Length: 423
Length: 189
Image (cartoon, rainbow over all chains, first blue to last red; front, side, top):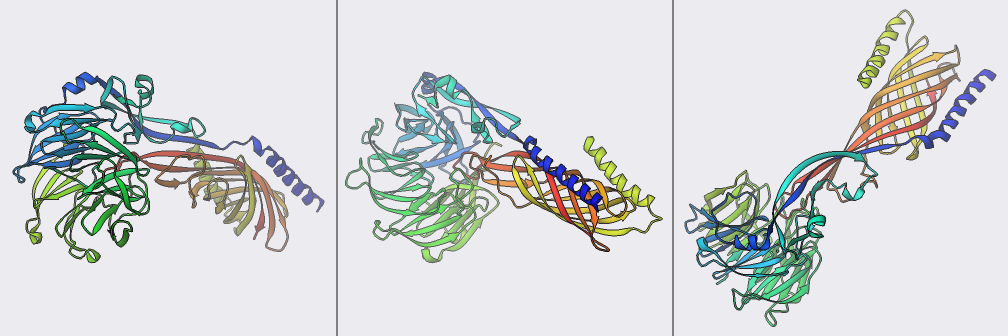
């Protein structure tokens, strides 16, 4: 028995000593990440300015927002410029020109004037002849807090990033080293050294989509930044004049004009601004808050339609259409929620409501009774992003192309053309 | 290569020793222990059951446990032990297997917003010495002390900045290795 006890004691003494030494044992943690870093390519502001014109058409590669005006589609190529597409015959659209505007993501058209952002600047173009676009003006630093693609870009300096060279790399390192740079994804090199922090640039209305950040109401162009709403007087269309800026909310994404109201969509809700009394000083008259998500918004006389989707930088987990009753604006309230897959851009023409539902494609609803939307047609098998329904043609921006549907007969909505995207 | 050799040795032991002891009547044993592990991440509970056959001085079996050190996991392993002595026996043991993932969330070493995570298991090993004391006709009290290592990894997804369509997701992998001292006590019946 003594022997057993002796051995037991020995084992536990060993264990105890082991426990004392456990401080010598180190856990290991290694972190392997693959990321792309982008090396900027610069042009001088003079070179960029000289190239803002109708250049030969380019293949559509990464389409963004669009505007339609006078039979033409102006389609943003994200961060690169604007494709000019002759759509006078929707069954046979033609890509006829490309306007090079580095850093461009937003645009708006009024009569023969196109407004576009060039990083933080506002470019004004005369598009009377879309094949011979003429630059009229560049207004500096209109959007000083321009935010896109995960980085803030501010104005000033003489060099403008016009393109990026992508480098892919994989690194493995200890978890306790350089935490601030451990986030996988994208890194933009050279900003700090070459141009200061984010020093990139010195950078009858058409109809825009629900993802737009520009909106036109009468003689004003309204543009939302990440947290503000700017009013720009365009009484003299080719010489815009900055008027005022009001704070809205954090994480503002979209703006949609309806009559004399502006519907501003943010991560946290929809805000309604009235511009009838004082166009240069929009006044908030109502709001509707919702769970955090990206939320394009459109509106009509009685209701606003807000789509919430997850899976983007806006975070959030909701994928739904919220129909908001406008009750005289001041107390807008949720009327009904419809669950969807990943709804993004939407458009309404009459009683037809078009919703881009991510990988579910385009859905068309009869919205005669908004409390009981009826799906009348779905075009699946492509990933849609934004839609403009106007004059019996729905133009859909999708991951693989620009689709056009004829909805003159709601019972026979059909594809009339597709303009492919270079992969 | 080292891992392969080790796995080969353990498998060889499992096959060889039972074969060698075929002339003896093999006895089924179930060794169930509660333990504690201690290392850089602090102390944590361990539960383990090993079931197999004992032949003279050798035991081999298959074990599974619940391991709450670091990220939770369920080690599934082959256990081989060599006894010394007659009625009450000292022993040395070695375990080798796979550390199955448990239910976990990324820890504080992840200091940024992620959109998805997926844990996967890794290598599990444990070596040590112990003592088995007979307390009833067919049951014994078992204590042991040893060193254990477990690996686990986590693939994190982060959505890259974009507002349009489905944003691309970037992934990175964290690999964790936990070496710690383990103490166990339990019954063998």
